[in-house]
Length: 188
Image (cartoon, rainbow, N blue to C red):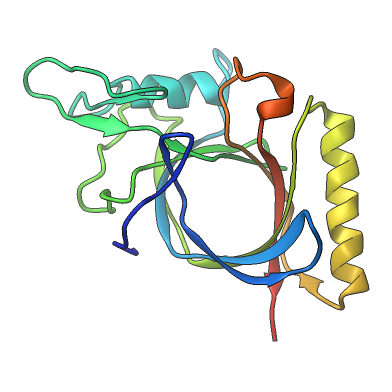
């Protein structure tokens, strides 16, 4: 795990990355260090977002609470965690909330729900395309295809499935939202 100073997006801790190459105004190759996340695919009763929200709201073995918008004051025997961005959703319908950089596999709050897991996301190199606005499935598909074409045009090999990364709350106006499609790549 990297223990460098955290990065912030709109006052929320976010994953730090190094830009390896800029391919266009909206597309770049990035390297992310390993990070901790909490992951779920949901279950029959509720979706992944609700299970992950419950986790950051204290549904974990230490009753640790996370605020998605600002620090939350929490009662005795618990700890405050700041919510980070982005939230990542892969094509397999798994959703991840990344934990603040101060957490590792040894000190992250352990989930209590059977459909929520702590995961260490290994260091990775990805291509990312950034856009804003409304974000339906058609728009995600459009930017995924644009990203894959840019990679092909630059002879860069995708080595995994694309994922969506969202940085803003649902209450953010569409033109102020940051969306990204990422895909793992192989750099020679």
